[in-house]
Amino acid sequence: MTDAALPSAVLTRLPDGTVKQVGALTGTRVWTVPGRANRPLELPRDEVRTLAPGEEKRLCAFCEDRYLETTPEKARLVGPEHTELRHVGADALHDTVAEFRRFGNLFEIVSAEYWREDHGFRQPASVVEWAQEYLSTPAGRAHIERLAAIRSAASGFGQSLEESALDLVGGSHDVVVARRHVIDGAVTDDQLASAGALTPDEHAAYLAFTVQALAEIAAAQPNAAYVAVFQNWLRPAGASFEHLHKQLVAIDEHGPQTDHELRLLAGDRHLYQRAIADVAVAERLVVAAAGGPGHGAVAFAGVGHRYPAFEIYSTSSANLPQEHTADEVRAVSDLLHALHAATGVHVPTNEEWHYRPPGAGWPMPWRIVLKWRISTPAGFEGGTKIYVNTIDPWELRRRAVESLLALRDEGRLAPGIRIGDEMTPDDVQLRYAD
Image (cartoon, rainbow, N blue to C red):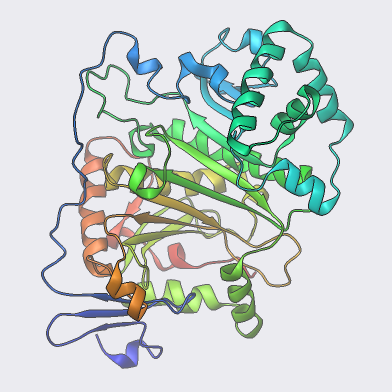
């Protein structure tokens, strides 16, 4: 490697083996020092318990025997065809088994009250009618009463039952939850059903359901500038439950990172191709690709992240996730699923979605960053703002390619994924600015 190949010096290996990185989109400075990459990734559990019969369905509030511990359902997918059901009533929750459910977060980051008091937002008639319908049955009324009491105890102030129902069904912070807490047939509570433990088809339904939720939240909350989408897996990564779920939160600003990227794009529309994809090709950091040219996705070992991170980019000309075709969403899903599977069940991860905010003046690609939360920034990082990442991008790519090849041999990946050196130049052409 030479500095001539990387004019911006985003990635440099020093004579002693130390790797220095600078995030092209963030400016974050990261060091990887020799001798730390072989530390265990998976966190040991304090205690592994044998599951009692039926316990796998009631391990946490997201499990299928505990549907009434979450807010009223906005939608669920049922059966092998993932048929959608909307607004399932409290007295019908157990009539079907939800493969995936979508409902409001009981403890929102940005609350319904925020939109009402700070933006003057009032719920549309369709939401008011749904709240009234939900309260009209004894089961629905009892459900809302229990949830309202929990929220009142946590917040210190109360609402009428009608106000509580309206906020619980009409919020703009949703959760998308998978059926399983542990894998089917699990014997112990550590046999968790992670994203990588889903089949490729299950993961595709999960991702498409999330994209639909993103579109619906954006349409329902006119004061939102952006909808943040993320997945926290395991407690060290911020998850409240060891149960697979994504979250979507409407916010009234883009956030400083997106604003920063928009400023960079004002001077370089092809920023992501030049600073991310081309660098990945030059440094052999391309991990895998799925789908066809211009309608697929490509994954890189990321440069300049505080944690080892994969970056999955859509190669479509569409910018917003909901503007992608079903095949384009599936390509992103297949790559993301493959990298979750390669990561393993017991590695804490964050999944972060990035895309062009509606109305923004510059094109941006849809990308998902998958971070391995295997270290904790401490005093050194706080004092210097230089972050120690124990695995450099080349080693991350090597591990991922090795794991993906093994998973493909086992038949666990979607067909058509190209791994490592199997990719062509077309696979790494980002067309978001076309």
